[in-house]
Image (cartoon, rainbow, N blue to C red; front, top):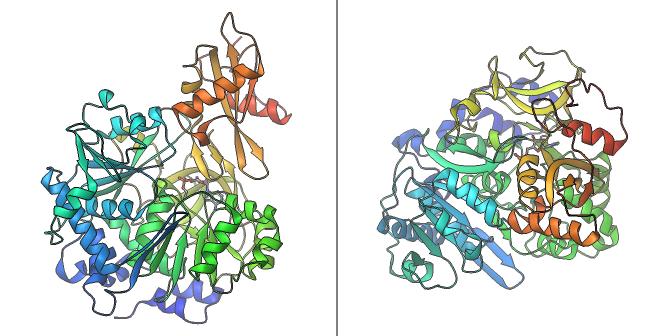
Length: 570
Ligand code: WTA
């Protein structure tokens, strides 16, 4: 069977191909790439792993190529199938059922990937948590999702407030044990578990993954994705990542964030490609070393990382043989034109920007390999996706006019719920458009240009932080009366978190106190959510209805005109 869009990828494509071939594209054209098109049985873990494990030409191909400073390991598709089957059997033994939420809170390791896939194989919903989360952040997510089981490590267990989580019945410990009958020993139970599994066949619309993400108000919300997302994750793996049979692919994102699942697990494995996973901390030498050692051909990372490599200098890059690289991509924050130019210098390759969000489940706007890059632009919508700039009523605006970046409802990987909050979910859609919260404009050639966030969400080193969550933590400190939190522009991190606070009676400003408050947030939430700057004020500006005017704080910080302050409290 012939698939037009993919044929276009493999040919000598140019802008004309994009416009002709991708017009009138129907997502159904992709269905025939999956087993369920003939069997009627669906499970994304089957399509990502078992399907290749059952293919005599693919089963012994390396699926997972893991390395960290102290461990190196690889698993073929056949081995990954067996290991994830075993973990699925462990889950079954402990009565995990379809639709249950099973969360993962652990560093990147082969065990993470076995567990994640095993959860999907029993039809449960996987909830990966970023390993740097501290107690409050872990608690809020496990409580809201009513997770029944958690897979974690003995080292991270102290950050799990078990007494405050009535739904959490069982904890699987990877890499060591603790006393207590709620603990399941991963290593021991895996040894006893069969590697033969009756996989749970689900519906395309059944739940698969929940990622928690931040908005400008309220606690983090559970963005709920379904198995159907595989259609778009697979297709963008080919169109955008340009994955081919023999590629060695490396996505640097942690699976606690959506890029680390959609593009660190699904897109590469649905396409049957060798997937490099690197644990441990970031240093330029280490990253270049990984590219060189595994002869990575396709590399997906983020502007913050590229900026760090850039500031380390081209001399560092030149010490390594990076000639295997064929395609480099970036997501998560605006990709500065300067970085695109540096990519040419350091790798002799352009860095291809693309745009999407936790809520969208997969890439929507992209600089395809076939598109001429306009540095600074996020590119054009992928086939089957209609993007536009709309006003607040959902009316489409003409080219060059700034407004809300919006996507016509109905792409395959779209979130299907905000967990337990249907009214919140509905609030994203206006007049048939999903409204992203980003402002942008479209130029006359149909390229989209990012301008900023329309709400107060902070993007620090590509990680989304909600100001409300940080403010709530700050005012739990005994010295803090009120707090307002903003993103302050920063050349390396994009934005840093800056907090304005007022002090309670009896406290006075000192460097020690500010550092103590910073650490308090760091220990409660996570390092990336802790304010890098804290400034003490006499009052925090609020509206008459009591909402913190972060916009005004930001104008003060940047020395900009303060605009309309008519709603400001006396
Ligand atoms: C921002 C990450 C500029 C944007 C996949 C979006 C970008 C938010 C780009 C989603 C880009 C993502 N250029 N900004 N190419 N890609 N963003 O949910 O503000 O962690 O709304 O998903 O990151 O972040 P999230």
